[in-house]
Image (cartoon, rainbow, N blue to C red; front, side):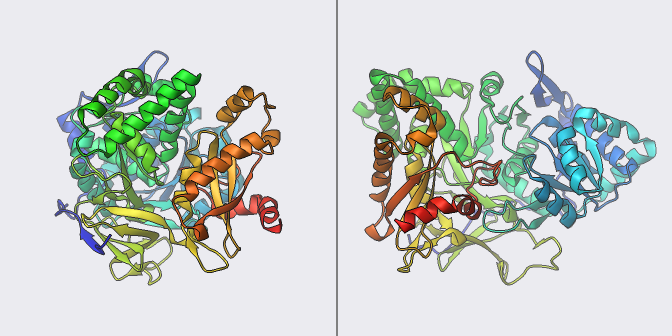
Length: 587
């Protein structure tokens, strides 16, 4: 690793009046009767054409005008991923207003903080439960999708309101604010990141051009990630810009049936999504023969991915494994997936090599809310497993004392309520990401850790927890792992068990089907110790994990221990399991 600065290709420029919706109307004129959005129906899928889409968006914008929403007003949007989320978001932007997305899993305190900080004029929510949560903490007007309020909003706008909405949309420029996205706050309180139409439109253009082969002609995406997260939302904008059909599952939490029905060509996920698919395939390989066959197929896929030119023996092994294992995996993903894109957190290299060797390559990218999502990404003709790719066109990456800095028109201007860029977050035009990383000789970026998440032991040793945590979590019995040890004598791990695997393990070894009992069982502890021993082989003794404790339950978003994209909220976890941590170091 030697480079400290790398530039992406020359960017495609955008005009000063190009905004996030600019291509939407052009697409509708060109492809009016072509289906662009799909949502679940009793039998099959409801289909929305381009002309239906822009008519819906225009009517919603007019309805917001009639409701008293002015240009520049902030409008909250709180709903699970569904087609109405997308329509509402586009309608807000078309009215010249600013979308403030909230996760539907947000607590009342989180909702209060965001809506109060943003000064939201109106809030669109999915259902009455979310309406009650908003009503508890805010006086903003509430539109409830499931109560028919969104349809009512469409009907509120008359001819004058439609004309006003059209005028506002036509007046949008790259300098106008499109959205305020509150960061997930894994290491502190959320901050409102102000993204302009220029940020969004420019990033859409570069991402579309760079991912052209991944998006493909006649492509389709099943959208099940939270649209409140900038990663999912930006990629959806790119899909609309590229005429890629977007579908929405009945249940974003469990989209497996809809994946098989929708048959997407592109899947967007965080690492946990791909881990769950792999774990489900591994569980189906029950019995010693099938398990051995599956493990051999995993090794073959990884060897195929790592080989520059697989030899005849490896190709033959892969052909057998394809019939027995990989084809079933691809069918579980709908049978038509060409590529997957992963973001939000690191994907283990072992898993990435497996999917790539099995014929479903996962391209990792890197970015933050502050970079309008993607800053770097792997693509088919430039991929390095373990890296997050090279910079997008027009984006530059620099390494300064180990920290990743990013420059480009995708980088935000300021946090809400701040006058401009501050010296803490910026070095001139360069945004300090707070992530640690390295560039290799070919310009591929490798992200090592959040700077604020480094563990510094009592002896002064700096330890990046994520690689060790990922290695432990790759064991079939382990669901999650979090390292502790800041200012302590040694590093230890909090470990949770995968419920399904633990149940199967207990049955196989004639153990009680109860996590509180299993966590103390020597057979279970020996399995976890094996996972830790294997992880420790990757680091020096000073960095190795000396002790661990198995917890009663998994970390959950509900308890405030995970972000909506499944990142660990380390501070909250440490508080919730303080007694367990104390017991490790008291021994």
